Length: 341
Image (tube, rainbow, N blue to C red; front, side, top):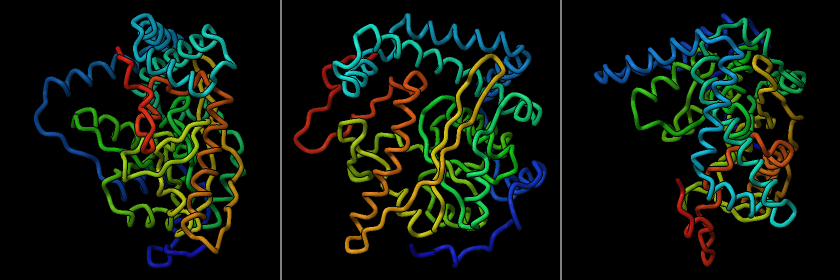
């Protein structure tokens, strides 16, 4: 693989991990906070909600999230989409009741995500050291100290962003690539939550230079590979048995930077018991006679690693998302006849 990163900054740390304080300084240096003008009522309301939720004991917050998830299920939020997705993936291998159970568990997890995201990023170092385990950190240490950067491939599985938060709070510079949120107050909340977890944010409309510079400094970059991409901005790969428009830049970034690729995700096991599970580094698949095919092969390989996690933990994936909305020419949108709640 080529190494584009030789044009950027040198490795920021001699070795990793480092102290939480050093990562805090790094995050503040390279990721600017967002300012919001106006919206006083909404900003005050968000502050009140977060302040209240932070006061809740872990057990109360856990059951509150569970209640939200059950309420969403009772209201059948996204049920048509979820059951369509489950039919695509499982067909007749699972019964209607089994698919309904996965849908229900997925929404309960989603309810807990909502509550946790407004609480845990601001819980401080004690939460991450006492209540959140990092599995297979040796794989991360080995990969990041190659000084090419690391790309975590995952998706809307388990606790989503909070997985990257554990990495950041464990002494590794971390950033997540995501779309900006239209609402400035919510966008600022998400940015502050990520910063509180020592995790920077890179918006998809930014240039690749920010990504490559970060990898050269040793950042661990978090990418969600389960997003439906608009036509012309993605590529069609196999996603659990059906072609889906997917992120196409990940393999390119890896080829140009030499970064290691590690699948990872975070799940909640109890009121105050969380686990971030990292896989082993994925191998690069060579096809020197066809560079475009090589990128496609590696994008598929990375997506396969994420799909494997979803199939192992189906109750933790966000099934209400229209993953197969963009179709190859000649195929029918599977959600076209469905009416979501």
